[in-house]
Image (cartoon, rainbow, N blue to C red; front, side, top):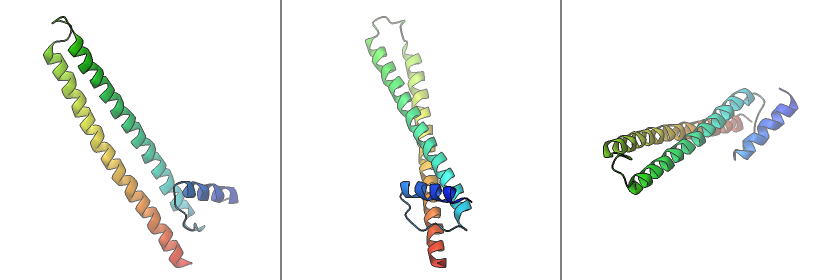
Length: 122
């Protein structure tokens, strides 16, 4: 590993609030954990945006259904089906988001344990 790669990884760890000492023998594992952590964080953000989008669509649908003056514009069963689908999707996304947050926490904990182990070796 080059000095630049080491320095870049160390900067990334500091940005993620991991000030612990990074040793050369832990670099491959730490790099992999950081990549997993960044991937999971991005996935969490994507799920939050998708969840917000579904909520916005649901809110618009509910608003438009209240404003509909013609009975044929939106029938109740159609609105209920869309609301039910949106609620189900939001529940699924919320569960997925919770799982990803747990994985994220586990990766952070594992990373902290690696750093503690490396400090003990020094």
